[in-house]
Length: 626
Image (cartoon, rainbow, N blue to C red; front, side, top):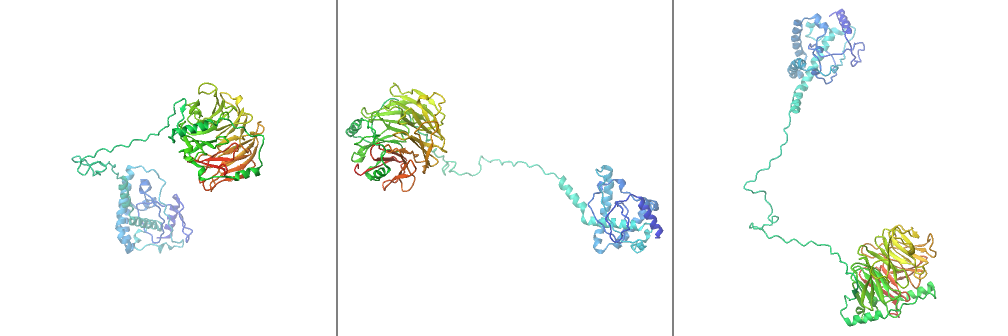
């Protein structure tokens, strides 16, 4: 073919719309065109093809038409003849390895062309801009090397330009490559898998039981013996209902001992207690003894097996020592409403213990009457306050309130005629024993959520102090109102619940509090004014846990600047601290093997009694008194 014909073809191709493709580096002067697949096939000797996935269904029918140059030069019959010749020529050029795939490629091409025509008539393509961009790098020069690139066997197609021959060759190689990939077959298989719908899962039908016989089950669970006879029904155990202790009937109760059956001995015991009806005069003229002499007297107090008594069956919640100068009498209040009296001068010691049951719930507070020591007053959680009269051998009911639970009480007057009673719900009651009946004179509510202890000032008896959850208040009994009584002074130094708060027994110039934050605090109450200053904070372990009664620090009536409190330390002990925070003395011994949570000191003699959570009392006293 002459160079003039090639130039004309190049000029004709430049008039068609062009599109840039990948550049071939050896020849920089080759024009870049955009190729589209057509039905004609021409093979060129050297070409590099870059492939991208495409689908023939995305092309319209008018995009797959032959170029105008081919239609002008060749008629339809000539094109058909050339196709047959090109196919024969392709068989010569294809290497032996590709011969096996040539037949497949021809069938694939025929199938794809027919599919395109059929689908184009039925479906309108959604996209017309998607096409396969073929980047062709032509290895030819401008110096007339086109004659060398002509493939042998294609000389009959001298009417086609070298560019069109290369284009047809690329199309043929692409068709053979796609045929070797078997994309049409894979697409068909995938289409079948997608279109195939899985049947809905049907619930499995349970097989019908034949003759009413089901799966095998344990005869023991069916409560049937091996012979098939049903076993008798096992009796259901009775349900345990919490036994709430009923309240004792109102009115006076007869004083009968639970552990002593000898009536003659019991009458002698009552006669002994009834004879001690003279109040002891407080020895306040001598004043406080020196710490040195006080410590010397404490060192002389010992404990022995003869001074350890088992009194009640439950934990001890309260304790009081009789102020007698001749006999040593100890009273304890227990958890289950028991009131125990113990005479340490009675031998054998088992004969000196008497237990009564005047209450149905824990006895939290005990006092001997300051006007008549033969009377003992006891207060309980069950909402009753009783007075045990040994001369008449009865427990007389002083105050009763079944709607509330009592926690503590104290005497507002020295003759024990008027009382202040604290409730667990934060209320307070004024009781006058001279008024007939068992009701209160005034019931007042406080700002405290709970009241644990109540204690009256020993000198200015109109003042009393209460200990609650985290509050310690000082009230004036003359200013109590039925609703919203406001305290005179509030002690706000505590961070946790307070177990007790007591004035010093002689002058009331000090207040000691026991708090759950493991601190004992001593305040200066010499002047009941707007605020009471904190004097001393004593670090002391007050964490008793669930099963032990809480500690309550008490003043020594003989030495009101010293405090008595139980201890969790080992070996077990009872400790005495000075108001400055220094430890004065520790009581201990081989016979003290448990924690004494509640302690009481005799008002005039050096006798200390401590009660534990198993109903035992441990008495420390001078050897001469023993």
